[in-house]
Length: 170
Image (cartoon, rainbow, N blue to C red; front, side, top):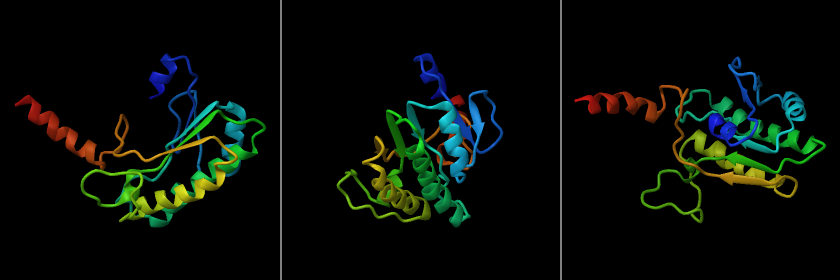
Protein backbone atom coordinates (compact mmCIF):
# COMPACT_ATOMS: atom_id res chain seq x y z
CA UNK A 1 0.00 0.00 0.00
CA UNK A 2 2.83 2.38 0.84
CA UNK A 3 4.44 1.97 -2.60
CA UNK A 4 1.12 2.67 -4.35
CA UNK A 5 0.50 5.91 -2.47
CA UNK A 6 4.12 7.03 -2.78
CA UNK A 7 3.94 6.55 -6.57
CA UNK A 8 0.74 8.62 -6.54
CA UNK A 9 2.62 11.55 -4.99
CA UNK A 10 1.75 11.12 -1.33
CA UNK A 11 4.25 11.11 1.52
CA UNK A 12 3.40 7.96 3.44
CA UNK A 13 4.09 7.58 7.14
CA UNK A 14 3.25 4.70 9.39
CA UNK A 15 3.52 3.35 12.88
CA UNK A 16 4.65 -0.05 14.00
CA UNK A 17 4.70 -1.86 17.33
CA UNK A 18 8.10 -3.29 16.44
CA UNK A 19 11.31 -1.54 15.36
CA UNK A 20 10.72 0.49 12.18
CA UNK A 21 12.34 -0.57 8.92
CA UNK A 22 11.70 2.69 7.08
CA UNK A 23 12.61 6.30 7.92
CA UNK A 24 8.92 7.18 7.53
CA UNK A 25 7.83 4.63 10.12
CA UNK A 26 7.69 5.28 13.83
CA UNK A 27 7.63 2.85 16.72
CA UNK A 28 4.41 3.48 18.58
CA UNK A 29 2.12 1.70 21.01
CA UNK A 30 -1.46 2.57 20.11
CA UNK A 31 -2.32 2.38 23.80
CA UNK A 32 -0.12 5.46 24.40
CA UNK A 33 -2.39 8.41 23.55
CA UNK A 34 0.30 10.99 24.35
CA UNK A 35 2.76 9.40 21.92
CA UNK A 36 0.05 9.17 19.25
CA UNK A 37 -0.66 12.88 19.65
CA UNK A 38 3.04 13.75 19.42
CA UNK A 39 3.47 11.71 16.24
CA UNK A 40 0.34 13.11 14.61
CA UNK A 41 1.35 16.63 15.56
CA UNK A 42 4.80 16.05 14.03
CA UNK A 43 3.64 14.42 10.78
CA UNK A 44 0.37 16.37 10.39
CA UNK A 45 -1.28 13.84 8.06
CA UNK A 46 -4.04 14.88 5.68
CA UNK A 47 -5.40 11.33 5.68
CA UNK A 48 -5.31 8.70 8.41
CA UNK A 49 -5.85 5.02 7.62
CA UNK A 50 -6.29 3.16 10.88
CA UNK A 51 -5.55 -0.55 10.50
CA UNK A 52 -3.89 -1.24 13.87
CA UNK A 53 -5.60 -4.12 15.63
CA UNK A 54 -5.25 -7.53 17.14
CA UNK A 55 -6.76 -9.24 14.12
CA UNK A 56 -5.98 -12.90 14.69
CA UNK A 57 -9.34 -14.36 15.69
CA UNK A 58 -7.78 -17.13 17.79
CA UNK A 59 -5.51 -14.78 19.77
CA UNK A 60 -5.29 -16.06 23.34
CA UNK A 61 -4.98 -12.72 25.17
CA UNK A 62 -8.62 -11.60 25.22
CA UNK A 63 -7.92 -8.50 27.30
CA UNK A 64 -5.34 -7.35 24.74
CA UNK A 65 -7.83 -7.83 21.88
CA UNK A 66 -10.26 -5.43 23.57
CA UNK A 67 -7.56 -3.00 24.74
CA UNK A 68 -5.97 -2.60 21.32
CA UNK A 69 -9.08 -2.80 19.17
CA UNK A 70 -11.27 -0.53 21.28
CA UNK A 71 -9.06 1.64 23.48
CA UNK A 72 -6.31 1.90 20.86
CA UNK A 73 -8.86 3.31 18.43
CA UNK A 74 -10.21 5.68 21.07
CA UNK A 75 -6.66 6.84 21.84
CA UNK A 76 -6.12 7.60 18.16
CA UNK A 77 -9.38 9.52 17.90
CA UNK A 78 -8.72 11.44 21.13
CA UNK A 79 -5.27 12.40 19.84
CA UNK A 80 -6.77 13.55 16.52
CA UNK A 81 -9.36 15.70 18.29
CA UNK A 82 -6.60 17.48 20.24
CA UNK A 83 -4.69 18.53 17.11
CA UNK A 84 -4.77 22.18 16.05
CA UNK A 85 -5.86 21.15 12.55
CA UNK A 86 -8.29 18.61 11.10
CA UNK A 87 -7.20 15.78 8.78
CA UNK A 88 -9.27 15.62 5.59
CA UNK A 89 -10.40 12.01 6.11
CA UNK A 90 -9.94 9.29 8.71
CA UNK A 91 -10.58 5.72 7.60
CA UNK A 92 -11.30 3.30 10.44
CA UNK A 93 -11.16 -0.40 9.62
CA UNK A 94 -13.67 -2.56 11.42
CA UNK A 95 -14.36 -6.08 10.13
CA UNK A 96 -17.03 -8.20 8.50
CA UNK A 97 -16.53 -10.41 11.57
CA UNK A 98 -19.13 -8.21 13.29
CA UNK A 99 -21.80 -10.11 11.30
CA UNK A 100 -20.86 -13.48 12.75
CA UNK A 101 -21.42 -16.74 10.89
CA UNK A 102 -24.04 -15.75 8.34
CA UNK A 103 -24.43 -17.77 5.16
CA UNK A 104 -25.25 -16.17 1.84
CA UNK A 105 -25.14 -12.51 0.98
CA UNK A 106 -24.45 -9.94 3.65
CA UNK A 107 -26.05 -6.54 3.91
CA UNK A 108 -25.05 -3.60 6.07
CA UNK A 109 -28.69 -3.61 7.20
CA UNK A 110 -28.22 -6.98 8.92
CA UNK A 111 -27.98 -6.99 12.67
CA UNK A 112 -24.40 -7.71 13.76
CA UNK A 113 -23.98 -10.98 15.69
CA UNK A 114 -20.27 -11.50 16.35
CA UNK A 115 -19.30 -14.99 17.49
CA UNK A 116 -15.79 -14.32 18.82
CA UNK A 117 -13.86 -11.72 20.79
CA UNK A 118 -12.32 -10.20 17.67
CA UNK A 119 -15.70 -9.57 16.01
CA UNK A 120 -17.18 -8.33 19.27
CA UNK A 121 -14.26 -5.96 19.89
CA UNK A 122 -14.73 -4.49 16.41
CA UNK A 123 -18.48 -4.01 16.98
CA UNK A 124 -17.86 -2.28 20.31
CA UNK A 125 -15.20 -0.14 18.61
CA UNK A 126 -17.70 0.87 15.90
CA UNK A 127 -20.19 1.94 18.56
CA UNK A 128 -17.55 3.99 20.37
CA UNK A 129 -16.41 5.66 17.13
CA UNK A 130 -19.94 7.01 16.53
CA UNK A 131 -19.32 9.56 19.29
CA UNK A 132 -16.61 11.16 17.10
CA UNK A 133 -18.57 11.52 13.86
CA UNK A 134 -19.48 15.16 14.50
CA UNK A 135 -15.88 16.15 15.33
CA UNK A 136 -13.90 14.12 12.78
CA UNK A 137 -14.47 13.21 9.13
CA UNK A 138 -14.60 9.43 9.63
CA UNK A 139 -15.24 6.68 7.14
CA UNK A 140 -15.85 3.30 8.79
CA UNK A 141 -15.42 0.15 6.69
CA UNK A 142 -16.09 -3.54 7.32
CA UNK A 143 -13.66 -5.41 5.07
CA UNK A 144 -13.31 -9.17 4.83
CA UNK A 145 -10.01 -11.09 4.95
CA UNK A 146 -6.87 -8.99 4.89
CA UNK A 147 -3.67 -10.32 3.40
CA UNK A 148 -0.34 -8.96 2.28
CA UNK A 149 3.40 -8.92 2.61
CA UNK A 150 4.53 -9.46 6.17
CA UNK A 151 1.32 -11.05 7.41
CA UNK A 152 1.91 -13.67 10.09
CA UNK A 153 1.83 -17.30 8.88
CA UNK A 154 -1.04 -18.24 11.23
CA UNK A 155 -3.63 -16.35 9.08
CA UNK A 156 -5.79 -18.29 6.61
CA UNK A 157 -4.41 -16.97 3.31
CA UNK A 158 -0.82 -17.40 4.52
CA UNK A 159 -1.62 -20.99 5.52
CA UNK A 160 -3.17 -21.73 2.12
CA UNK A 161 -0.50 -20.06 0.00
CA UNK A 162 2.18 -22.81 0.31
CA UNK A 163 -0.45 -25.41 -0.65
CA UNK A 164 -1.58 -23.37 -3.65
CA UNK A 165 2.03 -22.82 -4.70
CA UNK A 166 2.78 -26.58 -4.52
CA UNK A 167 -0.39 -27.44 -6.45
CA UNK A 168 0.50 -25.02 -9.24
CA UNK A 169 3.88 -26.72 -9.84
CA UNK A 170 2.34 -30.15 -10.50
